[in-house]
Length: 267
Image 1 (tube, rainbow, N blue to C red):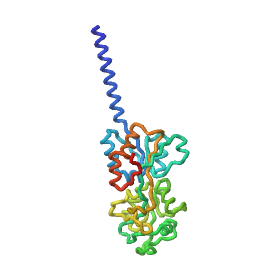
Image 2 (tube, rainbow, N blue to C red):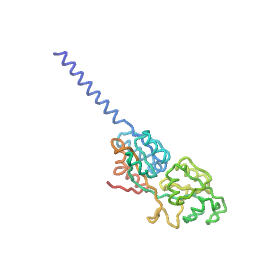
Image 3 (tube, helix red, strand yellow):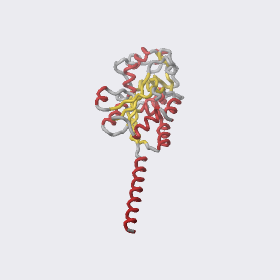
């Protein structure tokens, strides 16, 4: 009897210990998160850090183009993605979930030393069609306009071509691999022009956001916005749902709103 009691106690202890190991492993299981460069610039490392601190869930982060992060979801390389381009209808048919959660103005910007403060949409089209190449035509100095654009697979490139160029091809001098890289270029090149989501450049003293048709991106009348959406396979659950809830209703929502991001869901 004594032997049976000892064996039973050992089994119970082993089960409790094994259960605890499983719970610890589950709690520390990282969220594989792929974010577009613009999405990451909008969120910033602070949002991800606060999420991990609040939930105990570590985040395995990848930053790339919108096309790349959606592809990672499709190929099971990541649990959750944030993209600035919309999914195709076929994605819904194949079981993908898209949740639009925020928007931010798409802005045209230059180096802070540039004297030009505003352009019309038609002038932006001229510049990025290669039809105008000197700032003097727009009230600036007699300097060549240097056009730098994000990679063609980025949401920024796709959305700018849609909103500003109305589907026509973009002419450029240099192409950056990621959307956030054009900001670094603008800091260093005095007479550059480029485009990105406002959150990526807001408050940066080295760059200047241009008004379009006299309208500032801070105005409610500004018409050019990019949307941010979560992309995942199936209905989000576990760490995926925890992150989405954190952004849409939790501390993440507050942090994004402080950065000027317009949240689109309050549920």
